[in-house]
Image (cartoon, rainbow over all chains, first blue to last red; front, side, top):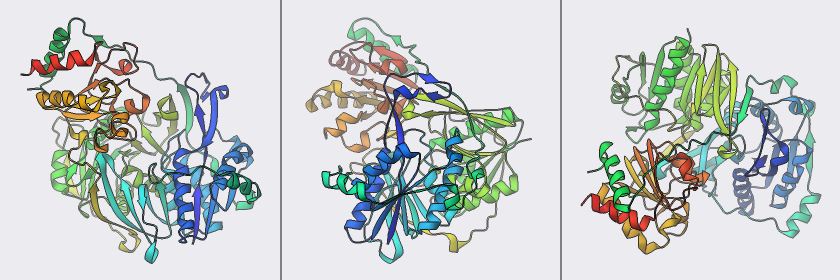
Length: 263
Length: 317
């Protein structure tokens, strides 16, 4: 069984920063492997260690600078990596779900994995949509926001738990092949060992452009335009109750009764 | 004319609050674009749900009685077929866990752009401007698009629609290819300590690091009892094992939108604020007047919680 894990390098922002046009000034940006994808990767590596999967391949849509994060994924146990980049991607100012879906579809069709894992969302743009759109596009089944996966994958079925709101989990059986979007907390992602880091340098990291994948540059012509970016205004118009504890507690009690929510 | 279709969200026999918020969001778009507001109820007790969502602004409600619970294949097929019938410019759904399980597939099938987690929407009937957050809420961005779109809206950002309406309510027939249904829900389970759902509370008494010690929890328990409120907390309290995970408010806990949220000894880290900023009224009790919680609080008491809380309990005795 082959597993494909879509991992992404995301930008991190310092506490104090400036916005330049519709982007954060890159002096204030750092980079890391997307937190959610780290859990997806760990889940895949555990499946291989359990003997359920034979191979774990990562796929990343990103420029050469992102190879530091891809090597990190290889150091943590992925067997090989595919990185997709193209001038068309470099020129796109906003990569929407459609564009990412089209690019990843080409990789899924080439690799033909039995199971695709990826994070629920990315820490920067937080679209939270690519996994499910990809599944639909390639005709796989799917489940979003998975916080538990049974590791036997018996009878071509993935038994998962989906983390719903309000502390409720949905138990669902999903037929393979499938795409699962993985929630943080599903496992404890490992740190890369020194041995893993050394081995990662020798693992295959294939770079593919659009022509290699049979993609047309129009695949990334999105219909969305980012028109502004700004820091949310602080809305500190707080009314401070002054006085003794009895007085302030009295003011709060009055408010609660006024709202009709206290006895 | 550009119609709007909103798809309601429900679970285990009840409409979720976001369904009423979706009516407000959809009504706003319909008003701005001069179109009709359609609403779809898929699965569950569709007739009761339709009655509950027959609210001012809604022109037509389409009921699709298929199954009791959410199934993404049914939702994708139903939404797709409704869109083909109504031809709405905008399809709105919840940015809930289930919303994220079907709306991306809907957008993919319809070949429409998708924008998730919108916190504001404006349209002139042709161009749609959406506001959303990036980098964990450090910045907001506006995104514009022309024409049709599928949008998921963040829960707790729009007011819940309440005014009764006069919509037409009719069943809508969908054809579902049963062979294409590849996932089966086998059950639901509450996470550990599932004694209460803090997302349903009208008043939350929420505590943070300021409570200092586990034994001081009795004080806030007494307060919650006196106010007939529900007790919740920020992450450190749950990490310490003082309260079960189902009491945690925040990004990794629950997103709550009570009428009143009383934050006691909570500094207001962004991860916590993400879970409670949609509260109607926020009261902060904190000795630090510069704590970030003050940025979003409506009322504040800059005093020691160990003085204020007993005085407050006394007010209700």
